[in-house]
Every structure is written in structure tokens, then in C-alpha cells.
Image (cartoon, rainbow, N blue to C red; front, side, top):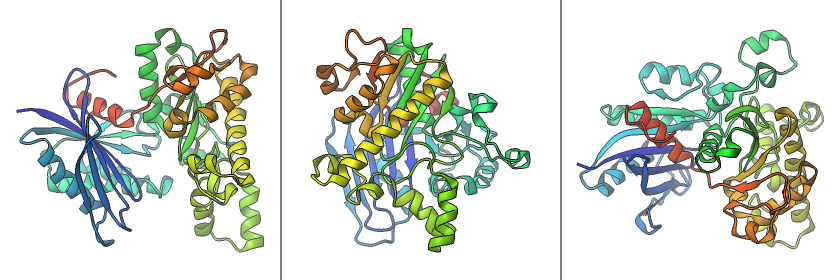
Length: 395
């Protein structure tokens, strides 16, 4: 009987999943998602070659996260044709101060993770919903949770601290950092493919609809642009990034904004969308002739360049710069503009390599190597799941 492991990444309106055949390193067999949950749900699954192998659409809002998870389970059973799902791994945004590594799921763990919902109210409930569904529907399948915050627990205490009264710090109000599963994957990829860089001071840029930077030294996170929430740091697709708290107080007193409308503003109506007034999608902005689109892109790049300086300062220098994420992997113009802004750090780009957008893209005489590495949170989750089940592959 063929064995598989699954990785699930649940968001507020979608559930992404991947199914891997178990080998020395998991090999992706199928990948897909149910998008539009709560609006107009749609399932699409492709095989390892990108061919569509399953599609379904629902005409109403009836399908919730639990129903979507049941659909994914049934679809997976059909696709693996009598094979066995050995385990399911999940991305969970917040592990709080306690969890710095993947954990095997049980009812007690789920109860603990539910107490962290106030730290990530827009993510944590949706992350936990599929876990509870599978635990009820298929309790015989082992489940593992991987935390976006775990990779950053290695940061020095100073890097995790806010300058606020200690009672709040003791209660867990600190800098957690996110995108940790992606940064862990990139660190492992460096160790495997560029070992001479992996032990150095590396600034990693995960640039997508959500965007952040991480300073990695000797393979460990030492600083990140994201902090207590996933809204701090860089400007993003719809998130504002770092914002003077006084602006929030001003908007509340002068514009009558409430905590609820402020939350919507900083998470859903700002960033590239808010500045451009056009779209949160970099591709749309690149094709626009509107000056506001250009200004949004310029601000996005400016904030990245400025924060790369911050990460380099935290690391004591920069021995390599790595791009990943939807924009980082697919937008050579953004990469070129960012690297140009980092010339003072010894980074220079090679236009031809940058156009190809894979592996080393820096110029031959660049003091600082610049790379593009395709990240895979799902593969990292699958690896951790196998390791937790006693079937270790590459980590």
C-alpha cells in the first residue's frame, strides 16, 4: 500500500493543501485549494505536472471550513486510490511563547492553542478549524501542527521585547515574528545548496501579499520585521505595516474609528491597495498607468530597502540576500529596485540572471550574493510531520 502525508494551510477564506508521497524527502503528488469559502467556494486540484485532476464549485455560501475540510478528505481519498494517509500536518500561525517546535495534536494542545486566538484573531481560528474537523472525522490519522512563530523563538530576548511595562511583557506582549515556516525552509535550502552561505549573516525577504524580512545568523533567526502581529513591519498587499500608534489614536478621536474599523483598516484596506486605490496585486499595479500605482510600488520598495538596513544592523552585516514569496520569486523589477537600494551593502544584480529569477541573480563582482529561492511551506510541514511520526527525511 502506498503511503502519503498531507499538509494543510488554512486561511480565512481558503484552505490550501498538498499531498506528498513518502520517500527520503516527500515528493509532491497533488496540490490544490478550496478558495472563496463563505462567498462562492471552489475546489481545484492539480497533479505533480500541473494538470487539473479535480474541480468543483458550490453556488452558495453554505460551505464552511469544516465542510471544506471534509471535501478535501474525500477528494484526497479518491486521488490516492487506496493509498494510506500516514499523517496530516498543519500551519498554525501562533504558538505563543511556549511552542518553539512542531507538536503532535491532541485535545489538550488544541485547547491551549485556542487560548492564543486573541493574539491572532484573524488567523488562529481558521488554522484550528480543519484540525478539529479531522480529529472528529478521522481520529486514527495522526496530526502535527507547525507554528509560524516557532522559528523566531531563537531570537535574543532584546529582539523580542517592547519598551512597555514588564507586566505586559510577562503576559506575552512581545515580538513573535511570523512567516517562520517559510524562513525555516529557506534556511534548509541554503544549507543544502549554498552551504558556504548558510552559516553566515543572511537577510531573507518573504515578499507576497503578506511580506516580511528575517535576519538569520548561523541558521538561526535573530530579528524579524513582523512583531506582536503579522501586520507590523513592511508594507504589504492590504496591510499597512509599521504605523505610529499615535495615528491610530488620532483616527479614533478625530474620525470616530472603532477598534473593529481600525482592525479592518490596517489589515484589509491599507498597503498596496490603500496607497494605490487600485489593487493589492503587484501585477495589476505594474500594468497600470496611474501615478498612484507607481507611488504604491515605490513606497513598497522603499520600506523593504530601509528594513533590510535594520536587519543587517541586527546581524552585524549581510553576507547574502534571499528573495522568496509570490513577489520575491516572480517580480524581477521589484528585486532589481530593492538590490539597487542595497548597493551600500555590497549587493549588485545581474540583469540576465535576474530575468531568469532562480538561484544566484547577483553580478559576478557583487560583494554580497543575491539569490531567489522558491519557498514551500507545505513541503516544510510535510517534512516535520514525517519526523514527528518517526519517519525522518531532510530537515
